Length: 312
Image (tube, rainbow, N blue to C red; front, side, top):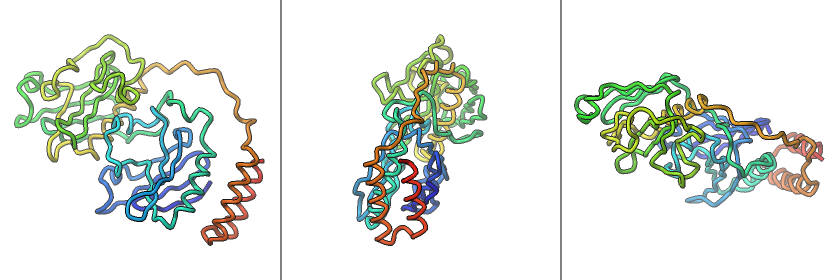
């Protein structure tokens, strides 16, 4: 689309096949969003788009990702607070008409299988190397292996006895992240073939890669996190969300790359499909309202109208 929609704490830049979300840095911006800086979200990664009233005279444009499309949300497993959701754009209430227009534009770009889970990660994970300080040790990830280095003052006797740990991602089946904002937060590395604590009924078996069914190896994932050498535990000021969650997402994405590629489904021809003329007419009508309200310039109106007419 080539347009820019500026909201509170973030700006969305619409491209041909994706939206680039840039997060603002500031005292009021959540630290997780500041650490992410920006994220490019392919339209193929989205399942739906909503526009709802927000708090204190705002509206919220929410691009809902497909299950399994984003390693960050897969690792988070539904534990993120609403304000830390990178797919929410909060705008002043007076921008509702403009936000509604972009919501309609995004919906028109959703793929035919948008309601289905993604068979691979479509959103890029944070880049390695990454590290953070947990309560009982320091975790580091270089892109190929994860290492835990224990602290004398925080590590349990079981971890200290086991010694520092290194885990190649090729031997892992996933990660299990429990938010440091919850009681007994931790990051656990799950060996291939083992199930996570979230269980099969969780949102898409978060943190675990489907098909990672090799024989279990390494530490026992059923052990408590403070006793498990394959886990680091969090505490006040240790393993904060903005450090430990991107770390978990990067590891999860690296693990996914080590798994066998899924068997491709039969190709579906969608290139011949065209939007319904009634949908195009409604979008042009909506565009005209924005033009009359002064929210779209003459040149922008002419260019966008021509683009919509070309889709007929």
